[in-house]
Image 1 (cartoon, rainbow, N blue to C red):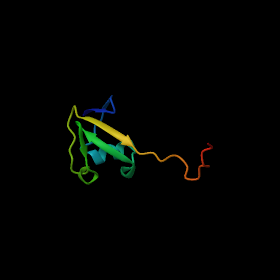
Image 2: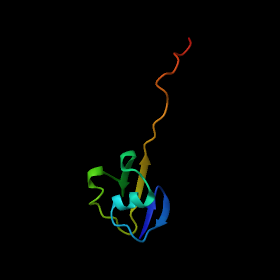
Image 3: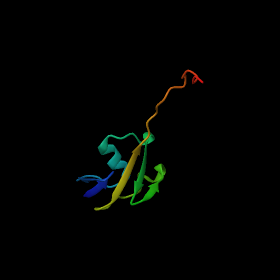
Image 4: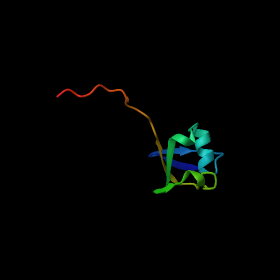
Length: 75
């Protein structure tokens, strides 16, 4: 199956759902959002949303950052 993921063409042989794709890519479900063909797919539908040849996905990783103990800015 040919998919476009974040603008990159990829080919997979043994995936059928968004969940199986994320597993194969080694992505943790709690840290990503998935858009399939320009539609944001809720996490509770990943296991039942089938993928088809030619689908386009955007997978966004959530990354924490910054510090909570920054010194106050000088004036």
